[in-house]
Every structure is written in C-alpha cells, then in structure tokens.
Amino acid sequence: MKKTNFTLISPEHRRYLRKKRRSALLVWLLRAGLLALLLGLWELTADVGWTDPFLSSSPSRIAAAVAGLYADGTLFYHIGTTLWETLAGFALSTLLGCGIALALWWSDTLRAVLEPYLVVLNALPKIALGPLIIIWFGTGSTAILFMTVLVGLIVAVLHMLTAFLSTDKNKVLLLRSMGATKLQILTKLVVPASAPSFISMLKVNVGMAWIGSVMGEYIVSRAGLGYLIVYGGQVFKLDLVMASTVLLCILAAGMYFLVALLEKFLVKDTDR
Amino acid sequence: MKREILRFSEVSYRYHTPQGETAAVEGLTFSVEEGSFVAVIGPSGCGKSTLLSLAAGLMKPSSGKVERTGRCGYMLQRDELFPWRTVEKNLFLPLEVRGDRTKESRERARELAVKYGLGDFLGSYPSRLSGGMRQRAALIRTLVTEPDLLLLDEPFSALDYQTRLKVTSDVAAILRGEKKTALMITHDISEAVSLADRVLVLSRRPARVIASHDLDFEEDDPLKRREHPAFSRWFEVLWKELNA
Image 1 (cartoon, rainbow over the protein chains, first blue to last red):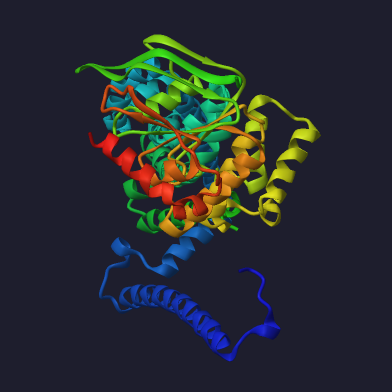
Image 2 (image 1 turned 180 degrees about the vertical axis):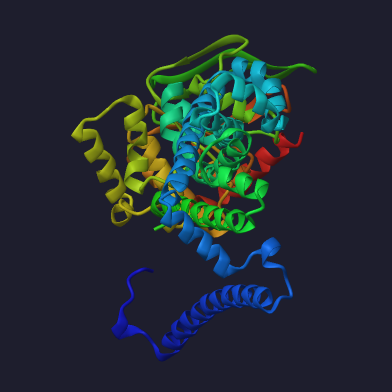
C-alpha cells in the first residue's frame, strides 16, 4: 500500500486523497486555533481585569516565569533533575517489572504464593510510604527514584504477567508438540507475542513515572519541577506553579510521543 | 505386513479436577501402519483430542501403553502461524526448536514451499495469505522436520466450505505425495470418508473403539471420492454407528 504509482492514479482516487489531506490539515488547524483561542482568552481576561492574574496567572506571566528561571540559570537544572528521576525510575520499574513478571510466569508456585502480596501492593497508595522513604533514603534524588520505581513497578508486573499468561494455548501446544523446552516457548512465543502489551505497558508506565517523580518531589526534594510547584504554592508564586505545570505537560507529552514512535517501529513488521 | 508407526494397547486416561476424576478414554486399542491415513471420528467431547495428545506424547496414559516409532508432527484446527514471523521464518520454527541449523534443512523447507505453491510468499507475513494458503503453510511447517507420523486435529474445521474442499484436496495430495502416515481426528464423517484409508469410530466418553473400517476406494482424490457411489454408502454406515 505504501508504494503509490502516480501515473496510475485515477482522478477519483486523486480527489479522495486530496480530501483526506484536507481534512487532516483542518483538524491540525482547529487544534492550533483552539489552543491560541484559549491562551488569548486567558491573557485577555487577565489584562482586562476579569480575573485576578495573581491567582489564575496568565500566559505572558507564565512565559516570564520560565524566562526568569532561564535567566537565573536554574531552568535546566530543575528540568534535568525531574527528567533524570523520571527516566531512571521508568527504566528501572520497566526492567524490574518485566523480570519479575517473567519469574512469575515461569513458576506457578511462586505466582500462587506472591499473588496476595501483589494485590495488596497494587492497592496500597504508595504515597503512604513517604515518611518511611525519607527515613530510609534521605531527602535526595535516591528517595524520589525509589518512589518512582515503587509507583510503576507493580503496574508493570501485573500488566506483563497478564500478557504472558494470555499467550495462545494452542500455540503453546504446537511448540510443545515440536519438542520445545520451556525456555524456547518463552523466547520464541511468549515474549514476541507480548510485544503489543509491552508497548501499552510502557504508555501506562510513562504516566506512572511522572506521578512517582512529582509525588516524590512533593514530599522530599530540594530541586525539580515538582519541588518548584510545591515551593511556588507555599510562597504564593502561582506563575511559577503554572510555569512548572506547563513544562511538565510538555515533557510528559514528549516522552509519550517517543513511546508511540517505538510502537510504530516495533509493530510495523507484523502487518506489511 | 507393514511396519506399525503407532500402537495403543489398552490405553486409559483420566482427567483430575478438584471436583473429581473423569475418564476420557478407556481401554483404547488400535494401531496405525506406515503409509496409511487413519481417521478417527466420534461424538463431540468424546476425548478425541486426548487421544492425539497421548499419541504425541504430550500426556502420559493413566494405564496401558502408547508406542510410537519416530517423530511426529502436529497440525491443529487453526494454522497457528506466528504473525510476527514471515512465512519462511514460520516454516523454520520447528527446525529452530530442534536446534537444526543446517542449510540443507532450510533448503528443504523452501523447496516444499515452492513445490506446494507458497514460493512467492516466503517473504510475506501470514496476514497476507488466504485461509487455504495459511493452512497449507501450517502443513508444510509440520513436514519440514520429516515426521514419521502426522497428527491432524480437525485441521479443516475452521475453514469455510469452499476453502475446506480445496484444502482437503491439497492436503491429501501433499500427504500422498510425500508418502506420509497420518492420524486425523474429526467429527465430520464426510471428511473422514473422503480422506482416509481406515476409519475408527469412537464411542461416547469414555472413548473406546467401537468399529474399524477399511475403506475400499480405488480413488485417492477427496473430490472424486465424494462423487463415488461408495461414498454415501460409507457415510450412512458411519452415521448409524456414531448415532447408535
């Protein structure tokens, strides 16, 4: 389907393609327009005095806050801190989660023994462990990293375990009839069959990692975007709170986009 | 006297669940000779699949003996091709499992594919193949390790009627061409009559053999068999035995 032979396109098909392109363009224009409209209204209501910019800020004040952070040289320090905690936590919880899920898939006994623990850990609000984490790991990045891993780990384990266990029974039977060992069933069937679930787990875990890192910064940190939000709230610098939130939005969207890109790369092979 | 590839002697198998135990097959005795095509028919849920798992050695009988010489290949209701592998890589799967990395085996797999009309699709993913072609690919996949016995678990039941007639005919031609021994279970009487040299009829659970018929067709092609006068005669005989 990718190869389009331009000499053979019928006028009807060309009209169809043009219509498709136009509607895609229209959607993009409307999206951008909506954003511009909202920002404009926000700015306008603040300027005219319908809203109090001290409480609800305004786009220009947010931009000024970001510029201020940049001017005193702390912008990239805060972004870098949060980004590192998030990415490291994301990577660790993903790796550990897949590893634990594999072990649980491998051993029925282990799975049966650990099941209630997983259920409880999954239901437990991780933030309840905040004070413990401070005492164990201090108030630095390690504590936040731990929090991030904690938030993402159980979700990753449960997601991947479900994927591993839902492998087509008939395909397992087929491999067994070929004389496959358990390790071969794992590598040739269970792991590749779980690729789509792996991607959807990554998408969920991106969100979890940001929750973990920002939550961690709320309780302990001295740096990072979550810290800026808490600090800004305490000293009533709501421009700073808003600016940090906007930065978080951009970073989280960027990371999600990268995962979506990975998905295209990973699943393009199956249906060509 | 031809060599026996598979022999069941007084084989019983019982399933265990917390609710109790169920006898799936009981005192099953039969054998499959080299080069023959044996079809097993029986009422649904009578333990036909258990019989194949026992033959494949995937389950051990509760009592009795299952003897098999050589390797077996298993073909299931659906093709079970791996969608993330190309057709060629799917055909190599049994070789990989056996740790067979020789060029000759891979070449033989490719030759079989070419011989049976999949040559142009070796590099394609299964999603590009029609249902009939997929089932043919599945059969070739079971043939690449040169099994001595093929176990077919209702291999055509997931196909629509037109495709089914065509694929049945293809499979018969391939199996006769490669001189393979096959044991097929099915609930479809006409499929059994159109393909097999011998038909075993199983009873309701626990399954035991209640009849064995040698089919006296001089014709091997399933489509021609369906037009043969003896076809409806056999159909009737088997129908009565199944519903006795």
